[in-house]
Length: 78
Image 1: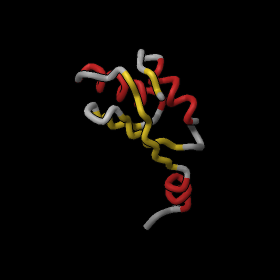
Image 2: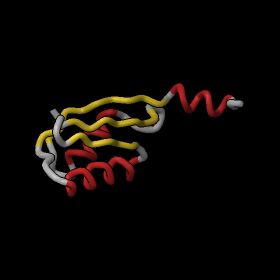
Image 3: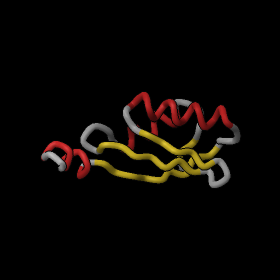
Image 4: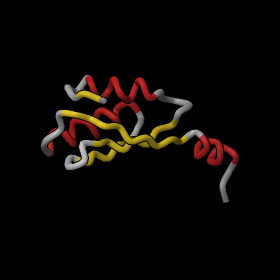
């Protein structure tokens, strides 16, 4: 049974896929996924597709903060 708090948390969860340039190896994956985890988001890097699928709570984070976290690691969000 879901509580009201759980329902509200689910309502504020968002998923976005970002195109990211400059990723080429396992270190890139760890760097980006670690940076996202640090700010409270979760990410799944697709090296072959050049994308990062991000799940985050929009009541806690903005898409701008997510992009900045990735760019601070040396990658370009396009």
